[in-house]
Image (cartoon, rainbow, N blue to C red; front, side, top):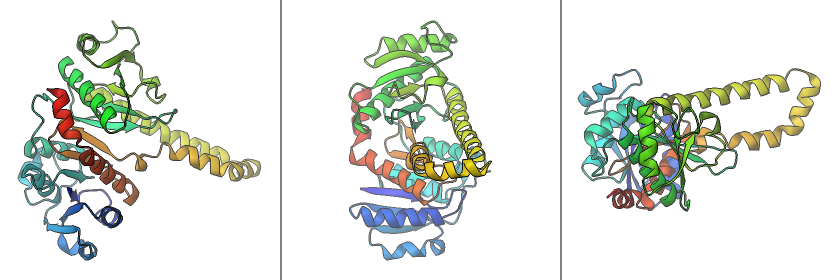
Length: 323
């Protein structure tokens, strides 16, 4: 197995990526890593026999226009994607700009035959600990009903092949549970999903996303991105409220000390660092987008997701399922 790793494009520079690659290389000696970036900043990786440093003198910044990636052929991001295009690697991992990475993947990596639009999929932590796949979470600003049906097929196949879910339950994110809810596009998507071979269970509202009652939630990229970021913001706010409350008095501080273990265990279930990043679905290679502010733990999780995708031959099985 061969994976290309973009080491330079994240908010925190290459240090977290280097640490993640060191741990991954030790634990997966059967995998060859091609780490793209400024070679002088990646010297620490030269001691590993299964790591090859690919010199890249340019960096795609978070502030760069997504379309500008076309002109940044010497960047660490584009060099990693070009390795996928040329069949030199089986997957790519980057924590760079989502817009630039998605645009680059669209330009340089082939889509699976029959896939009208690729999308971005995130796995949400849920109360029942099963997790729920949400797609699209921001790759597209607009989608058609047919595209939402394809998202449902890809999400269902992923849940079955990677997460081991038998007959994954698929739902459509909407403004109400009734089948007539939503605009014309969502009503049409409801009909297409219902008439498909999927285990479609109907509409789901935003307040139910973290319950874990369904395995796959289908949405257009605009709504999905708002839903995802709303949940992230709410989680951070709740954590701040809890922390401020626990530190508000001597008695509450004692209570916090006693409950520290339980609180830490509960909050860890909703830690994005252990989720593994978002997967760009619909490409002929495993393309994984790590969080822009990923530390070593978060980036390592994204690398493990790419590894799992390739190990389970998900792309080829997805091709078969979409035929």
